[in-house]
Length: 445
Image 1: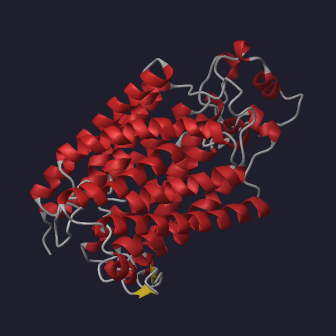
Image 2 (image 1 turned 90 degrees about the vertical axis):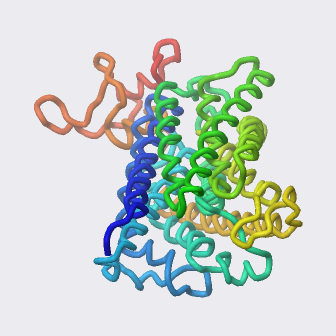
């Protein structure tokens, strides 16, 4: 079979989506403290390593083909992708792998500064296998919420073009549960050092995410007309969300911030994900304005409820994911046999279908994440020790630091090529002494 333009575009889009994961690492790394920046980047990178292997072995098989109770595909049907050798379906398999990678990586931001790297490495394959793959199969692969599925027959066909439920709501719900399981950081809402340490990293990460999102939303486009609509909507929704977030910040707190601009962009990208091919550009602007302002408020609520969602995964991804998914019940235009939302005279059917998908996604992701998280916390321990958290998870988990300032830098190898000993987490350790100094003496903590 000859390669087509659509094959080429999907491969390019897959590369763009894969780039989003290290972009997320930069975004998250900049938002946390300097002594946890490398750990955040590593949590994104290890997600790519683990999920890449899982996807080839059994992950892709669980999202396609003959289903088991309409919940997931047979994990052995295309085990190792051997049956796809010589088929262009390998391109689709690669494209879908990048979605699974970034979905689980998103969750890591909720447990920044305090999670064991080994525990995260165990969590990633379990969550992808037990949460992401079933949701992807149920909505996209022919399962319960796909065309002809049992839930679809009862409540109508859900619209989720690029992953409002499968990616955003599932990861946001998991982030909420995992933040509760792991618990608050030391000094949450009190320690002034719990603030972004590198705003340029945040802005660069947000820019990479915005770039990659054109492949994320547009990679599955089937016509030039559809691709054009997706491109414009992916441009204008985050643009409007950024503006409304900044305006909301100005009204509520007196200053528009660069962190707010970056967060507004991400909120808009999340909101347009499920609806990028199903709403008009004007509706996309309205969606962005609502999502940006609402998520700005959602993020502030974590302090009221005592939820240490370290890097605002719940407020942005769950919040904007819910807004974008449910908004289709109002602003989706009629297409492909679907009647459209309420504003197009489609009645309540589309809104019901969207709401049912939200409920199923929240319940599945929430309950399974709770079981996985509690099991890991019980048998491995999800949280580092008090001393390790004080030193910083970069040094305690990876024996590295992100920055070298005089003698304070700690690379993994010295100039002679010898590996340094693992840090000793004791009160006499100089690293502990450094981390324990007042903020005015330790600017980069």
